[in-house]
Amino acid sequence: EGVVMELADCALPLLAGVLPTASPEEAFKDVAAAFLVGAMPRREGMERKDLLSANVRIFKEQGQALDKVARKDVKVLVVGNPANTNALICSKYAPSIPKENFTAMTRLDQNRAQSQLAAKIGVPVQDVKNVIIWGNHSSTQFPDASNAVAKIGGTQKSVSAVINDDEYLKNNFVSTVQKRGAAVIAARKMSSALSAAKAASDHMRDWFLGTGDRWVSMGVISDGSYGTPRDVVYSFP
Image (cartoon, rainbow, N blue to C red; front, side):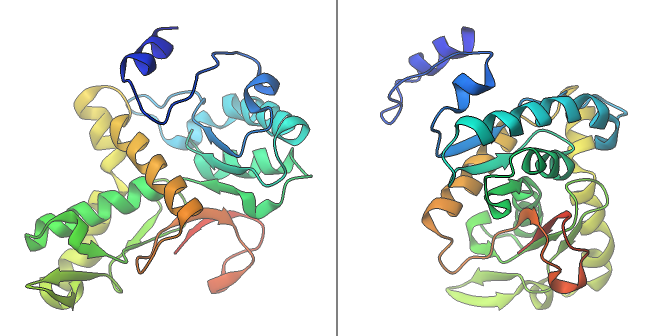
């Protein structure tokens, strides 16, 4: 109820109404977009895989409810960790909804990577684009700046050429992005909140409206592209 009050107090011009409910079927009735954030939260010292058993039950129930009452073209974004696995479970229990309609969020990792590169170069974050996040939303992900470009003085330049430091791009940059979630938890004793919400908004906006000339990364059910195993949720550009 407190969250409902806060939403009302934001006076958001596009918010038509809020339905607070503990029933997945009531929540998902005829929805076109589903943000699945309800998962057991990660605490300090935990890896995302530690959340697995608790979340299988949650995402099985949500998948079944989506299958039963949501629109068949619903766009599903799984934010709750372990996001890749949770998205796969959710899709498995919603067989009437196309597999490509289920995604896991790696946009937070992409935003983190862009932010790190922008700070390193000394440009606004919106002037860096086409960073890629490969793999799992975890400390095993691979942030890839090899195709990234930055706008400097009105000209698009390769991030690799501008930074001119392969050691940084292959080591410090990668590990900083991989461990950023744990660093946030260590600093604030809770997992990322505002940055995750912003990333979820970015992800869904681009899915509905398109990405223009910018690449985005999303965890999707693999079709075997780039030599990945089929039918696992993997982050691709």
